[in-house]
Amino acid sequence: MEKQIKQAMDLLKRSYSPYSKFPVSAVLELKNGKTYNGVNIENAAFGLSNCAERSALFAAYSDGVRKEDIKRIFVYTDHDYFVSPCGSCRQVMRELMEDDALVILLNNRQETKIIKNVELLPFGFSKEDL
Image (cartoon, rainbow, N blue to C red; front, side):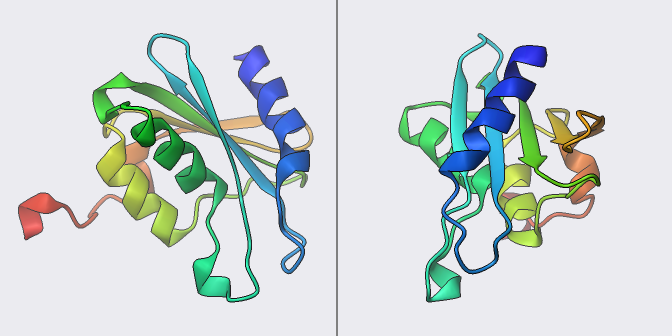
């Protein structure tokens, strides 16, 4: 886990967040040990921005990864408190990751908070609701 924490911390500098000044990085780890990186990418038209968690997941899915391949995702911000994924990310994570996949929140004190994906959005909208 130490390797992924360092990876997430190093990755933060790749964030493009000139408007919010709130960089976020994510490292998605597969069960086979492979990782995918994501950072938040902002745009002056804010609705066109993309969060780090979704960036990592979309990169993995574009490469053929599916939910059963994913072990956990690390989410890092350079603050002394934990920052949880936004509502859009929670919805995407709920569909693209298994319920018991781990979400590991990291802060700049190198503390971790570990929760299960399903705990982020317990009554998430899914394909069964369609």
